[in-house]
Length: 460
Ligand code: GDP
Ligand code: GDP
Image (cartoon, rainbow, N blue to C red):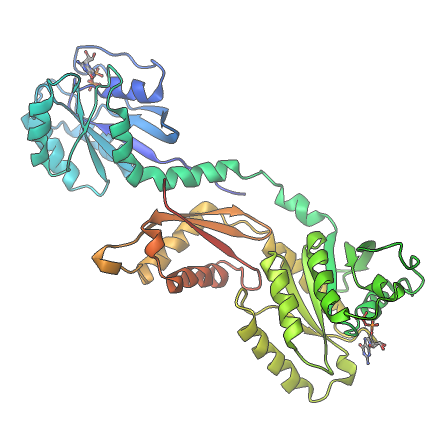
């Protein structure tokens, strides 16, 4: 099961009476909290769902700095704030721009600088011009230019957005994408019949293979010429010899009928068209090669087409019963595939014979496994653990001295697996680094033989 989408968390920090609760209410949009002139009204942490111009986040209002003595940092409260800070993606450090900085503001600032959380300085009560001096003064805190707002009058919220977006925008978008993902029931998908297509060049043995699998001369006695211009699907039950369990397969045949239709010319081209049609229906596509011919350019073309369409691909070398120099043939094809198929690593490769039935059960067992990998979703937490490690092991480059920041990754879809990486300055990310990430996903997260998509996304 997938972890639920996690919005970024923003914590509001500041000394009493600067307007934290008012800001909280403004951002949450509901008047939930008690607001009072008396310092210390907000005793506990409060949590709310906040939104600014479509940017959604969780917000926490802290009682962290409330005390009778405005110049001290009471240990108990401070502890509580520290706990809140641990899970926070950003802190809004609020001060009263009319009053200007107080010793307690300075102390909070010192403490915040020692924390890891990114800080957005918020100059509240800045309506009119009355906060200008305080805003100026606050530059000395070292948090950059503050967002000048009036929580009470709802002013400056756009400014706050501009400060927050670079920090939490990526995570917020990722959470949004996750929330949009159809709650497809992966188990139900895997319980349905395996939609399997067999494609390949003329005479590779597709008809023979399908007949062999079905155990009858089905295609030769099948529909008359002209009836099936396109594909046919044959529902069939295969008994897995490993478990003895029957498993449903929907076999998609695009070429078998062609023969009966007497189309003898342009067969080579048609094999590509067949493959293209097959992938519309198939989950897993088996590309059948002819052992007596080896791997040819046309085969690679079909294979790449299947992968471009995001389908799970397997390759079976047929006519193994008449193959010469079998092991060097197999290894040669293995190598040529590794070179010729950039989108996958180690595409499953089988030696089979449609004539004798050799290797067919193994091939079908592997097809079910491949469908599983193709349908798999990596939980977001595990995905980001891998991501953090990958970035640490090999940090993204800093072209022209400015670092590219990669912040977050999410799996946006399955079948095929598609990942979205969020960050900034992504247009400067070299292709080689993108490949590094894709290879990591394949090798470390179990998608070796599956076409993996990675999309880079900068907020805004
Ligand atoms: P907290 O103790 O930091 O949570 O502060 P509160 O939200 O309770 O606000 C303290 C006082 O400041 C209240 O009287 C608010 O009405 C007032 N206040 C909050 N925001 C603003 C603002 O933007 N402008 C002005 N003038 N007053 C504000
Ligand atoms: P298709 O055009 O891909 O459907 O290929 P066919 O199934 O019509 O087979 C083409 C030729 O290869 C036929 O003469 C088959 O008998 C032969 N053939 C198919 N599979 C095998 C096999 O595993 N071993 C051998 N020796 N011949 C095969």
